[in-house]
Length: 169
Image (cartoon, rainbow, N blue to C red; front, side):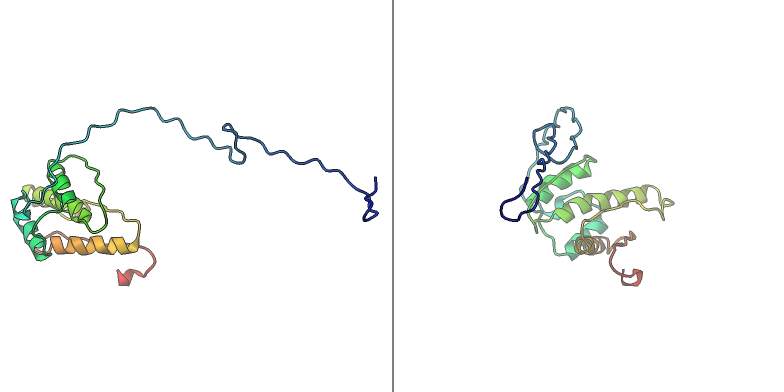
């Protein structure tokens, strides 16, 4: 058959059909794994009203670091998280930027580290905590807070991140 406009032989090509996935869509053949229904853990009761940091059962040297950083009263996230974490419970907390989430998770960790060192003075020189951060800037911010909180203690810390030479760290 000839095309009347170009006098070229006209070929008929069948349109390629796309395979449909299990949900009717094309493309990916990936199927999400089956996740069994699990009972969610009940939310803990908490009091988010501000409390003086000196009223928290934190190690005195750690409280000196808190005072040095200019912290006087807890924020809502700190009031909710710190007492529960000090009891050794796992916690998940969400709050806006600048509300004190870093101190909320660091202070219970540092407190427990100081208590374990006091219980066994020979237990030194081992990595006790690894904190992962998604960005270099957040890593540096967390390290700055750690250094401020542990200033009056014998704890040490180091920030390690990519993108710069080891000397800069």
